[in-house]
Amino acid sequence: MRIGFIGLGSMGQPMAENLLQAHYSLNVWNRSAAPAEALEKLGATVCESPAEAAQCDVLISMLADDAITRQVIVGHGALESLGDGAIWINMATVSVDFTHEMQTHAAANGVSYLAAPVLGRNDVAAAGKLNILTAGDKALIARVQPIFDILGQQTWYFGSEPSQAVTAKLAANFMLGSAIEAMAEASALVRAHGIPAADFLGMLTSTLFNAPAYKGYGELIAQERYSPPGFKLRLGLKDIRLAQQAAEAKNVPMPFASVIRDNCVDALAHNEGDLEWAALAKVAARRSGLK
Image 1 (cartoon, rainbow, N blue to C red):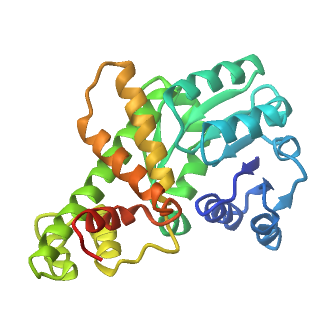
Image 2 (image 1 turned 30 degrees about the vertical axis):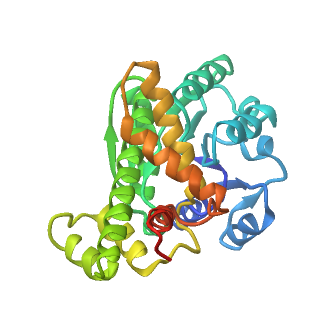
């Protein structure tokens, strides 16, 4: 089986590297050359275009958003290059509407479309310990399960429609953003009363909120370690907006999402969009008159 991998950012590159280490034949393409060149040293075939990379049995894309994915996969001919019976796995976080649109495009080209967004940061991707969220044809998922077993520690199934996997991922990222915002505001509160944020968050993430998301992001907030980012704040804003769109389509109120969105916009207004998403703590501190 030959795999094409498009999108070698902070998540895509370690995922592609794990596939190479598992001895898969891999075509790679990225808008910037350096990540692809690094993988070439490990045995990947570096392609000059997305269409060339898509000359494969299974195409995996890990691109930033709807617009870039549409431009690269559809606009640059990758989808048309996939042969009848090929599978396109989109592992990025995209919108529900985009998922429906790509299903239609894929079907028109004789290609099966599978949504498989992931939970985990780049260090988790490098360790092959992602949680992979899927939905769609179970037989199709079974065909690519060996790939998922290389990339992740568990595959979670959420229904017969690919958009259901996307919805689950957006809901998960909303909860992650809520956790970050809660720790950001709580840290500002204790700091205002003379308690070091590190002391408070150390206690909190060892007792009431002893969970990976709280511990990981709590440590970043406690240390004020927002660069280099594992997940950029501007991408967090993108995901919150996508969750709001999905919610509005089904008349689901999400008032917490509006708070997170507004605070992300505040961060962007202060040129903090390329910092770690945990930098929402900077917004809470700034509004509290803290440095």
